[in-house]
Figure 1 (cartoon, rainbow, N blue to C red):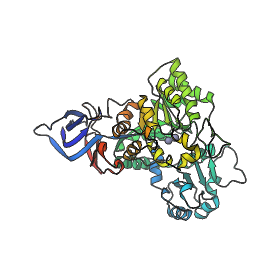
Figure 2 (cartoon, rainbow, N blue to C red):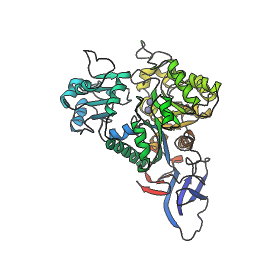
Figure 3 (cartoon, rainbow, N blue to C red):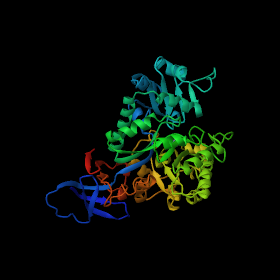
Figure 4 (tube, rainbow, N blue to C red):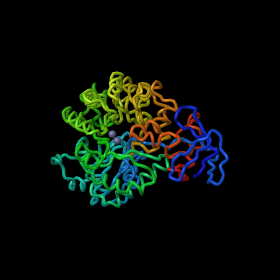
Length: 492
Ligand SMILES: [Zn+2]
Ligand SMILES: [Zn+2]
């Protein structure tokens, strides 16, 4: 037994519910919470030095493998011109014989364009190289990679290295394939360490990339005990039999109903403002999704699908509505992203008992005045993106996430962004924003009896901060002093 004391523990059972000491048993579960620190003899006492303590953060949607792998490779997040890109790439060491670059945004470089295949060939003539756009929905590859990838149909003779849609998926899948077990585990290990450093005690992660590759799933499941935080796994496949065979309670993740707003591939009900000839792409037919959702629902699998645009959300939502109408179950099927919605869509989500897994940082990065969303969608539709308060106030289960590697895995940044949504009507209070990264996240995976709040009988998973989130002027900058997992303190 040990007693954590001298702190303000925000239990997140209810707002204003605060205790000052927590007794934890040897298995890492909370034995008791105390308003006033008790006198207990002969136990270990841990002074938390007036920290503000919250349930450990939970990120409910990450691509941790890519997140880990890419942080071991070339990060193009802060480049301002292409020569900086080339300099970083020329110094990058390959992993398992491949070079990965991520977080490239053509809008952030002076030249306002992607590198060409010739430019990439000059840097890496002999080692396959992929440079992924910040949203993951397009990429550029070099000639070596173009030769090695087993394409579904031959590349056009005018191929300039730039890939979208299914070809983009094919290329990134090829790059992620055939890595050694060691490189795969190292990527997840790296991911877990970064998540822990940023205050997370549990993260949800996609495994594989929709191409029926379940090798990682088995590998990670067998090695979960080696990782410092808990992972909730999503086999990223649409084959229900495979999900059942590996014993997963859920299926999907970022399996794509559509693409992204940045790449003009998010499926919209009305055309793009800056490209009126297109409304984006529904990647698969209604029949495909209906069959998939029906089979998964029948077999009690929780379904997760990536939907950005209102047309994609409507497509998947009608499948969820159908199965719920025929056979109501509390599976909390997920709309991942849920980026552009109307009141009508949200009312339907509530009725169909669907959950929304959203990324407050998307708003921070792309929804501001003259930002990417305004350019693509116009002012009016932009105000209908990342509608956190509208979702929350309808009592739809809302959880927060980073979509890491798309944005950094950092719940404090997410909480901060949720309280500062550009459309003020959609802002959450700091308390609500904490809920979506703790209590609500635990409910999503059915783990509400194990973690998510600071309560007797739950795991002692805490994040200890130097400042109170509820009154902080800059939540994203609050220093983390330690992270406690199952009663064991990790200093940061
Ligand atoms: Zn996605
Ligand atoms: Zn994703």
